[in-house]
Image 1: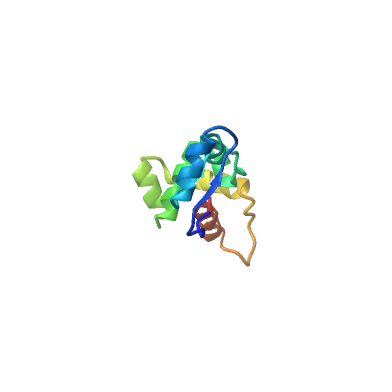
Image 2 (image 1 turned 90 degrees about the vertical axis):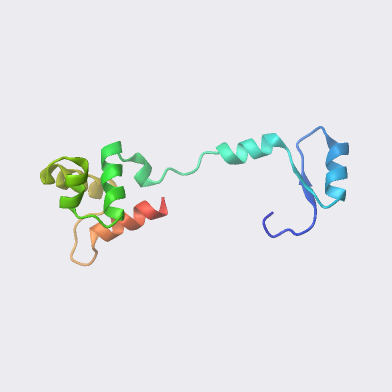
Length: 114
């Protein structure tokens, strides 16, 4: 639809005469039911969407470039608490420790893609 420069239409039912007029003048018509379905369809749940609020909040702060210490100060929690949450979301996002990948960067990329 985004690339269509002419008129087009898609209706489930009813309002055909009005739709034909609008399409004939270069307008577009999509049945409200179709729009509602498109807007409310279930998308695949991203792994980040399954994180508890606090872990999601900490990941968002890390994505802003904050260190664990800065995140702890911002949230007024201990550094140990932040480290625990980070370790938890690494595991939940499937980012196990290895010598090749930087888990913190991979977690931020996962967050940004969600």
